[in-house]
Image (cartoon, rainbow, N blue to C red; front, side, top):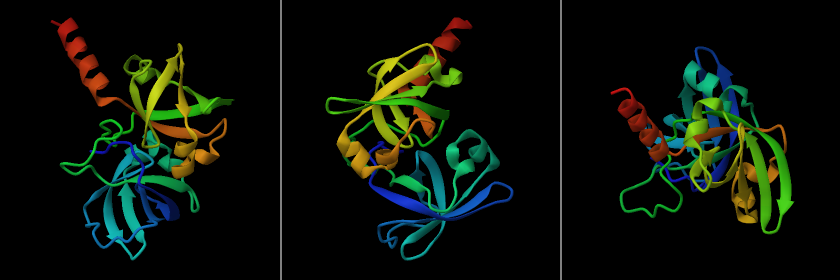
Amino acid sequence: MFTGIISAVGEVQAISRENGAKLTLSVPFATDDVAIGASLACNGICLTVTGKGQKTLSFEASQETLERTTLGAWAAGVPVNLERPLKAGDELGGHMVMGHVDGVSEITAIEPIEGGQAVTLTLPGAIAHLVAEKGSIALDGVSLTVNGTGKDTFSVVLIPHTGAVTTFGDLKAGDKVNVEADVFARYSARLQELKGNR
């Protein structure tokens, strides 16, 4: 489990695709305390560490992950938001993020506003009922507040700090990001669905 507060930005060092994908990320921190088998959120995707070097971590991803996330389009040099798992007693600064990506959104517009940028994105139909104004959402692993919703779009506001400490400093229209809906919205919707089937 994660919080959506990015702790570092890494970079894809190498990636190969055969029966899924194998990839290595260069990371800006020592990996001594990162265990093989540990989880790491990479652009919001919960991946398992399968190998490590002094400043590198390696992972494997299934075909399902390639099809459901932006990982299928990653190449060497792509920057990646990184977050270590939440530990008991840690401050929950964002919201509860599982690292289970629901789908991919495309940025349709970025407009400067006082204090930051308003970003509009496409809203995948499968999770439209889980996205509400002032609710939480994770984009490429970053915990954000939904600023507004439309029929097939939603918007968030990025403050300058977010752009400075994540990959979002270089966002532009046409970019695609991983989306994870709020876990509480997911379970609430499921309970309502089951209640309706009685």
